[in-house]
Amino acid sequence: MQNILLTGTAGFIGSNFVPHFLEKYPEYTLINLDLLTYAGNLENLKECEGTPRYKFIKGDICNRELVEFIFNEYDIQGVIHFAAESHVDNSIKNPGVFVETNVNGTFTLLDVAYKYWMEKPFKYRDRYLNGILSDECLVMNENEDNSKFRIKHLKLPRFHHISTDEVYGTLGETGLFTETTPYAPNSPYSASKASSDMIVRAYHYTYGMNTVITNCSNNYGPKQHDEKLIPTIIRKALSGQNIPIYGDGKNIRDWLYVLDHCKGIELVFHEGTSGETYNIGGRNERDNLYIAHKICEILDTLKPKATSYKEQISFVEDRAGHDRRYAIDATKVETKLGWVAEENFESGIVKTIAWYLEKYNNE
Image (cartoon, rainbow, N blue to C red; front, side, top):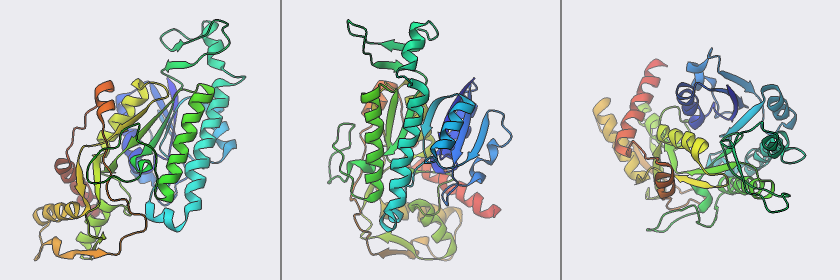
C-alpha cells in the first residue's frame, strides 16, 4: 500500500478523479489536502466518505509545516497536484491570491517533496545502491566517476503537476498548442500557472526530481463550480434568467470531458516519462455561442417550456484579455501512452446536463 498526496480534490476535476482512482487502483491510499475555499466542497466527495483508503485533511498547500507533517506522518510516495485558483475573472480582480496559491503553493509542495525524497541529496540513489530499490523502480545514467546521475524513469515517488493550455496564450484561426509551444500567458491566472510549470521543470532539471506536467484543455462535466461557463448556462437557463455570453460569442475552446481527463492523468502518472510534459485535449473545438445553443436545444427536449431557452441568450461586454482560441494537439499522449478521449462534446454534454438536472431536482 502506497500513500499518495492529492491536493485540491474537493474541487471539480479532483473530485471526479478520486472515486475513479480509488476504484481502479486498490494498492493506493489517497490523502486529500484541501483548504475548502469557495470552489471546494466535500459534498463532491461524499461517495468516498468512510473509505479506509481515503483521508481528508483540511489545510493550505502554502503551509509548509503542515505539508511536512503530512509527508512524514503518511510517508508520501507520490503527489498529484490539482489545487489551484482557476477562474480568470477572479484573477483579474484579485491576482495576488493566484500568485500565492498557484506559485507559492506549488513551490512549497515541490520543495517539501524534494527534501523528503532526495535529501542530502539523492536519497533514492543511495537506497538503490544499497539494494533497497530494484532496477524496475529506478534507472540511472551515471558518468565515469559516478558523481552525477539523472533519474530517467521512476514509478514512485513522482510529482505530477496539473496545468492548463492557457499558459500558451491564444491561437489564430488555425494551429494547435503542442508541448513545445512557447509560453505566452495573457491573464494573471495563466501567468501564475505558467510560473508553477516552470518551477516544476526546474526541480526536475536541477535536482533530478521525478516530475511530469499535464496541460489540459477546457474541462466540463459533473461537479463543476457554478462560476464556469457550462454550469452558468445551465443554471441561468433553468432559472429563467439571461444567459450571458462574452463579446460576440465566437471565442473557441477545446472541450474535454472530465472523466476522459482523469483517465489521462492516471496514465501519465503511471507511465509518463520523467521530466516530460503531456498535453491532454478532447479535440472538440466549439465556440461559446455554439455551446449555449447546444445546451438550450438539449434542455428544450429534456425540460421543455413555452419558449426555447435560446431566447434567454444575451451578449455582454467582453472581459479583459479574453483569449480568442485554444486548441490542443494531443498527439504525444495518444501515441506515446495510448490515451484516447472517449467522449465527443455532443455525447459528453448530454451526460453533463443530465447530472445537473438531477442535482437541481434534489435540492
